[in-house]
Amino acid sequence: MTEILTHGDITYRVIALEQCLPLVEGFVAAGTKWHSHVLSPGCAFNPYGELYAIVVEDDDAHVAYIAPSEGFPEVDKVFVKMLHGDDILDEGAARTADPAEVAGSALLKRLREIDARGVHWHHHMNFPACALNPHRGHWAITVESDAGTFSERYEDEPKAVLREIEVIYFRNLAARSAGE
Image (tube, rainbow, N blue to C red; front, side, top):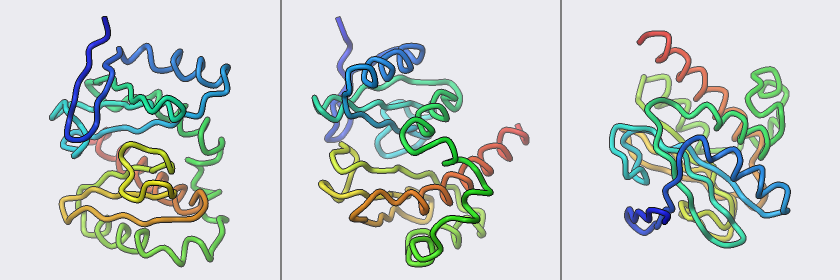
């Protein structure tokens, strides 16, 4: 029997971390729309407190699966590339991204400001049907930080903005990991 866990307005089906990749591979093979999130320790959507968690959402069935993880769930890097392209974590691609989309993002400007001050933050890429999306029906990016939570809504997938954010996030994650 699958364990069910409710946290806030979201009901999760609990799975083991090693079940996440086969679950997603099954979605891909079946043509099921899906997306994923990493929930950092302390994230408003994370029922596991000081642990990381990964969420895989079946967008067709509106089911959210969650797997707790002692450390950053590395399978997320696979999922991010599956969802947004192989270059999504590429700093070089970020430098050549659509300058108008990046320059027009108030969220990215604010994120860079808090990051420069050393404020701890993490983000969520919200697909239109996402259970975590504060702008349901639209693409959105949400940032949770010690300086507050803020989001930005988009009509289309904000790949250039997301790439910039992912590069900064993973650079910070690597620096924190190296310091441990």
